[in-house]
Image (cartoon, rainbow over all chains, first blue to last red; front, side, top):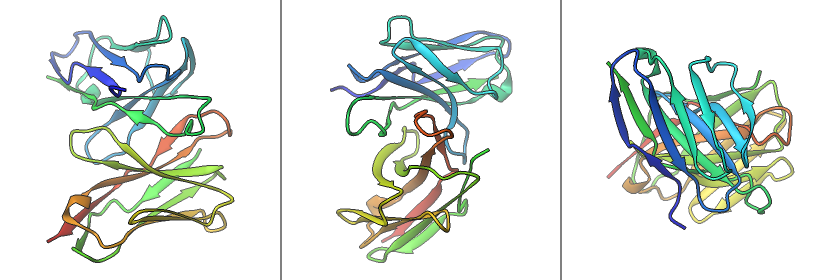
Length: 116
Length: 114
């Protein structure tokens, strides 16, 4: 068990560029979550998957954000036409839905995005 | 919509004392509530989960209480140590139950002074 892995750890981009982040959950974890966190705030829910199905997407998420989990394993989060307000830590978490600890989320270390 | 409130001001306590953090929620009755620890630049780490039919849960120096009438959870760290310094987040499952969509509070930053 190597934990949840996120890449890259840091990303600096210019406003208007597209960025893509990757998350590799703990193997066999079928739920995968994306959260966004800014300084001094708690993680804000963005979206989550059960296997390859995207079950819910936050209404706060604009159309510039899209997430995929094509084979029910790793996931990508893409932000198009980045804005300075997108600067934040993007966290990925996973869990196993049939385990007695199914309510427990395991987080990665996040991708810190800075939009200049 | 569900709302979670944690004391946004940092809590400073002396080593060896008991730290008590508060989590209040509104507009919902969750089946359970969780507490996480987050260190700077890292993702949150799960600590404890307490269910609506449990009044209290303990794990080593940690204790969590859950008052569904007050809509409040208290998180205690006894015999606190400088290594306990971190931000502590409470989280609950958003409505409706069974969605496994988790809402987090803003967190309380704890600093244990040696």
